[in-house]
Length: 224
Image 1 (cartoon, rainbow, N blue to C red):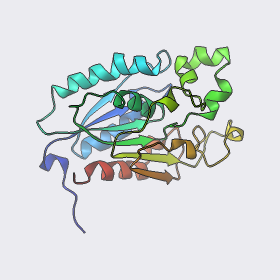
Image 2: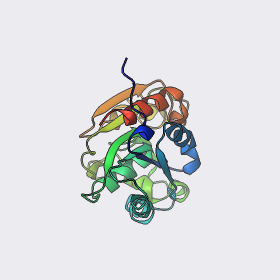
Image 3: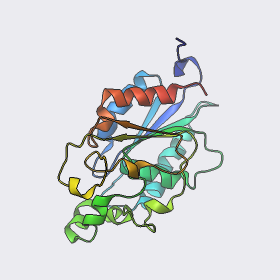
């Protein structure tokens, strides 16, 4: 069996991590540690997911982090992304208007609500939800005109990984198909995806599961 080249044997590529709603950069530490061991540089972006809209997250947090990163990249290096849940939507919003010269590599989206979220539909008009989770909830609806359904296709080389083992069953009655407790498997699909995998994991801890991390590392380490 051929051995995949280690990133440190070539140009040192970089991985940017984007966490989900109500979480922090600490939620992505498992991915960060695994990517660093694999030889990648890592930027674990923190953003206030419960007080900002998607566009504000992109312009105020993601874009500045990427501008700083570009100054540190080795010539010829590419920037990969690994996202969880809302982080995937933030990535799509950034990618839709990314600079033409940005050295974008591969992306792995873990449990993204790419076609909106039934829970967001169910809770969006309840005032306490808006106070708790912020304005982004109203942007994640399943209706055709929602922000999440207006972002267009993902960039090439984007892999989507969904879970189908819910630990949270409070909202199971809202889903008509396999789901991870928060996002239905079918709503993870997005135009332009290069691959789609379903794994026996839950939504909350998908980014900590070893089989998922194995998939992420293999995909990002594939020869160009």
